Image (cartoon, rainbow, N blue to C red):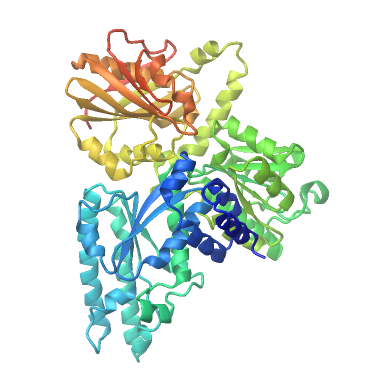
Length: 618
């Protein structure tokens, strides 16, 4: 019996699906593709406005779907996959074959993500009969040329993220060429065209190209012949679902739900056996077929950590044997220095995860937890439903696939700040230890030596600025999310300010940790948003930054600075931020508040902060 599907059907029959929508995420957490697809059919019948009226805090993503064939088949898997991650999908399908017109129309429907579904049938519709490989090459070149022009037009208009897919080649086409040399020629031309498509992302940051080869390589059929022939749906339901799963990962990031922490169990997860029973010499780390599987998993952990994932261990073990294995075992592929923190004790794991998130100054919803114990996974799910739980079992060869299946840490663009994140969080833990040696927070801050640099964002920093708007949830006045193209447009606007906030202290350089977005309107400076990484809360960084901006506004002839706060489930801590700096409240309905500073009395930066500013454009 499919419990998740049955429960959703029961809720639907009772007319309670809207009321109980927040429960859908938990019901679908471990559901298979068929269950998610069926759930998506039910959920796609709901009115999104009804869900938002009942649950105003539900993150929602507007998705426009267009392409060269029939598109309806992607709606259910998209809706189900987004719901599985706690998101509400608002999907609009375009007309059959209407992608050229839709991408060319600057006044087209607004969407956060626009999907262009490409298929081989659209290419072969342009080749003569009979055809040869070079005829297909010509059609591909024409299609790529048109698509690049559409990409330029769409992205330059700042219409959100555009997603296209590489075009999978069904076997039925090369099979129509009788000689292997011609088949090889067709394969080379096809792959070269897809490679050019993938390279478009190098010049267009708002473009995402999903590589369908990676999906087809998993055994997913490209087409279903009857659907392709009779309904012009040229991509199979299974391929559309795999595609929708990838889009859901992208959508999750677009609303600030990218995960940052990977917390792994050790016994049975990172190595085989039980350290306390088998000893360091008895656990399966690298030798034998199972040991090799565990070692492959260890290498993936290290690979993820090298790209900014905060790797942690949470294990029921005594700490010293664990540290000895991670530091001294000759064959283990992931080492103690790869972990931001290793927690080994006998306390309940949900308590350790909560304290770990607190120590890193992150919410528990930033955590992905991997464990081979159904008991531990179930307890964490019950006590910390915001944590993403990945189930692994006694078959270590499947550990890697299960960890990477949901793209928990996927981002549109990896920045230098991402790569530096683990080292900076290790420094942050050092700061916390340093704090414990002081009797007062003021003494600590004076000795910490906080330095703040506020400047116009440089071109190479704009991707990081966009990332901060997409990821930051707690210190975020308005939670407006900006794609890279949006940030570039602001940076090019002579009336706009895109300010980067860098910090450093005695423990090291924190990098670009804050953003201020503002716009000059006549003699008023309007704050569009102020954002700050949770890593540097409560050190005077935000006060110093706004003090500098207020001084600059006054010195350049502004009569006032106005700002806004929009409440979300996570940003309550900044509701009083602007009033604490002398802003007067001009309106407040409990959800949105507006503020005004008349620039007559500007609070100076905190005494313990060393502040430098640069208002010049790069």
